[in-house]
Amino acid sequence: MKRRDFLKAGTSLVAGGALAARFGSSRAAAAESRRDVLLSVSEGAPNALDYHTVGANRSVFAVVWNAYDRLITFGVKNGEDGNGHYDYTDLQPALAEDIDLKDMSVTLRLRRDATFHDGTPITAQDVKWTFDRAIGVGAYPASTMAAASLTHPEQFVAVDDHTFRVDFDKHDKLSPLYLGVPVVGIYHSQLVKQHATPQDPWGQEYTKRNVAGGGAYKLESWHPGQDVVLVANPDWRCGPQPQIKRVIWRTVPSAGTRRALLERGDVDLSFDLPPKDASELAANKDMTILGVPMESTVLYLGMNVTMPPFDNPKVRQAVAYAVPYESIMETAVYKRARGLFAASGRVSTPEWPQAHQYVTDIAKAKQLLAEAGHPNGFETTLSFDLGSAVTIEPLSVLVQESLAKIGIKATLDKIPGANWRTAFSKKQLPMQINLFGAWFDYSDYFFNWVYSGRNTIFNTMSYKNPAMDKLINDARFTTDKAAYQKDMVQAIQLAFDDAPNVPLYQPYLDVAMRKNVSGYVYWFHREMDYRTLKKT
Image (cartoon, rainbow, N blue to C red; front, side):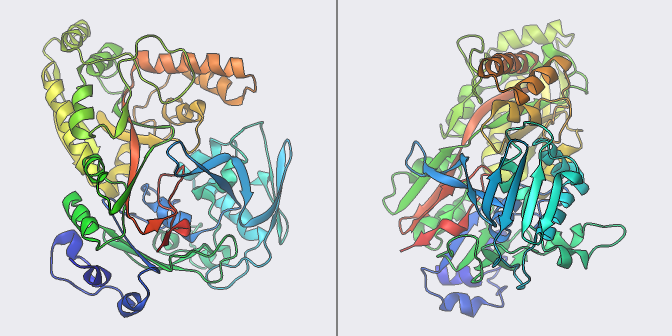
């Protein structure tokens, strides 16, 4: 497929059918300068346009981040590899042109020239409605706001049309940072209210399929599972105007097809590149491969501790000793990750992620399984996200084969990517391969999501331990560095000993771009920010 066909193609990249025109603006796109149009491909696809949607997947962040404004943003610094990397210690204005951060509150003065995509001015009332909505819709949005001690509407005050204040209930280091996360992208409240119903008071059905924002990009079209087209908003005032005027983002499940398109120059960028391709393409002089270790992110093998036999710690430890760690690193991720196994001793630092004590030891695994009352093993299922099958399916096969050596017969359960989040959030999967990344690089923050007894959707193991909860909560609110270190060292060791999940590796986020593309910035949500990209 040639570049000109990519601009016109609809289902062909996904299903292999005949080329079909899907965009009413295909001629306009083709007529634009190549410097103005970015052609991007990825394996995954957004299953909604609003991250408040129940079951919204990670790809939704890419739409929300580019199409909605947030009150603040973060500075950008050079990472260890020299590439752009967000800096959560550097709060900067965005929709708010002035930030007055005090001990127990923050007051923000909004830009008077900021508008939504239809030209309606953005007011503090829209901001308050957005924050109220994040709590009011419940489920994940409310849970993530609670992680920053933002839990009730009274904390959010529209002082006047252009002044908004947040009152803090606790000394929580995350509260100010949450003014700049995707969950509180500012909604056009009057527009969404027009589509609300008694059964859907927050208009979620509308925003699931439509953008109601004022961000740097407008949504031109979305064909679920196939493509998203974004066009630059010429009236955006919350940052520098994007140099890329049109983004055509296609879903191409085949890694081979994505690679071929990139190598031929028919596309400009391939996001979240499979490890094998990233490793092999690194030597290609026509491309730039950027590999960033995903901050505070772990891919793990989880076990639901409420389901026998995984309610027995010895069974979970047996699984930990049966995992083929080295094979996974060699043949599934091609060393494009940091292994989290074979630590030489007990936990001594609060950094996360870090390696646990387990290694592949089949004899030890069999012994623990026998001590747990399962000398002949048992049958179970191992679930994974089919939307990440290029890497996760071979990894799951390796785990399946190794578990069979200790008598555990694990049937692979391949769940479509659009349904993955909904499936694991129900807490009914006995074993699952899952990836979780905390937005900010605090160990207690990750643990509050994955190991806390408040049982968020990312605690896919339904793990509850009062001792763990105390350690997490004490670390979360302390300002004593020594106390924090002590609490988190104990929490990390407890997680390894109890083994509700087995960390496998900290993955790289690999992005491949043609040499004429630059300006990539790694963000905590691990999705693309098209606003800073440019082409020569």
